Amino acid sequence: MSDTDTSNDFSYLNFVPSTALHFSDITMLNASYSFTVGDCHGGSLRWSVSTSATQSVFIYYGVPPSFGNSGVGGCTPTSVGGSYQTGFNILSLTGARFDLSQYGGPFYGTYSDAIATIGSLPITSATLVLESGWQNAPFGDQRLTLTNAEINSNTFSPASGGTTATCVLPPATIQVTKTSGQSPGAVNEVSTIQPADNNSQFRVVGCNYMYNLDTSSLPGAGGYKVEAVINGTPAAGAASFDLR
Image (tube, rainbow, N blue to C red; front, top):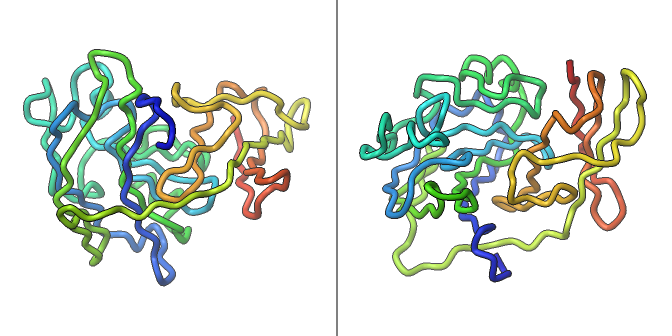
């Protein structure tokens, strides 16, 4: 990050397919890593697979249902109840580790749930994300050494002493509209489930806009439209979902 606040720092590795690739076409998501500080918690280490600028499925490393958040179920062999998951295809790991809430699916679903919900959708990117150093003690900082990452037949290995390309995207604010149900119209105040995030603004991860919408901040059951507003204009590709 460009500011001096270390609580909002993050690292990511981003893959953008050069040809059409649907979620069901992904057969391998693998990261070989070792934590040098901390462990899995707070929603990372994870894969974020995006199908638009406003919709992603998050796939969490760790042991369900805690994923390290209660002090157990992290990613390293020394974590109590943990599981060393480096070098494994995360799509083959058991348990409900797929957050499909941005598509109207379960917050924690299985791979089968993911295929049923978004298998036919083309992806725009797949991103390996580490960004939960904001979480209070005893969790705190995360740091790992990435040996390589694989997405199908594509393999990335960091170059020793090399540099990592970054992108600069304009700020984008979230705009939510209730399209059906009781009292339709603009939703003036929404919240994110990530405590360190700005409730009105998307963050940028892997050169993609990301917002983890807290559905409890929405005014009840009905249909919703979510847009990213850039320079005062809603971007193309609005996301729609139903809340029951």
